[in-house]
Amino acid sequence: MISLGAVVENTSSQVADQATLVFGYADSSSRDARADDAAGLIVAVPLIRPGEKVPVGTYSYVRQKPSGDRVDVAQLQVTGRSDAMGPAQRPATRRAAQPRSLTKSSVDDQSGTLDYTATVSSCRTLIPRGVSMVFRDDTGKIVGGGLDLNSHEQCVPGQSTGQAVITRSLPPTAVAAKTQIWPLCDLAAKATVTGPSARSTEPPPSGGQSAG
Image (tube, rainbow, N blue to C red; front, side, top):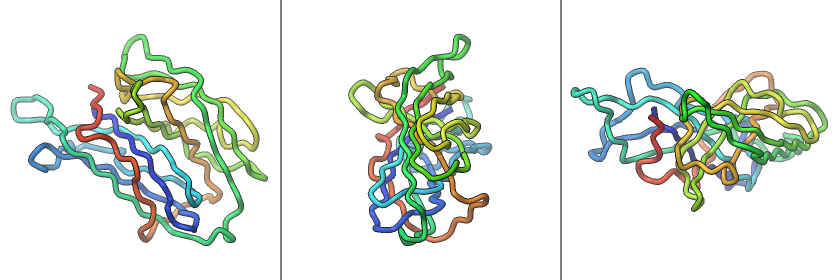
């Protein structure tokens, strides 16, 4: 398993609508290091406002060598695309979240839960798409990420508390206070993705952080 995280910024003057981030990774010879059954490498972010920086995390599987050992990941790539719509076409919606506590599982130290407080500025309850997390060590360096598509408490207007489940993607050096979390709240019932837009401004370090 590999834990993946990046911070993506919308540098345009338009709302990035239905942004899609695609993660990839390779060995030191630039050969694809994804396992045949690698999943979770495409993460949808419903809305990114102009100038907004969004932590995007996920996890997936690494290809094995013929010996059975896992391939060493040396390179990480993050690419993005989205529909871009003028600010007037989308109501003002702001989201923010702060971590409160990070608890490791007693049976698997690569899993756990993250308790958080979310603040949503919106005139109505938004459609929840889950929670994205980026983990950092005590120096602030990105060491991985997580994605919980079942955390739905965070899209109610005002302030609320929630808990995100971390599934086998918690790096040993992750620090609770440095963790970034983002409520994936949507305005639309269905999403479509076309065209280029959002870009990663703070990708993971080379090699990233593996979690098992």
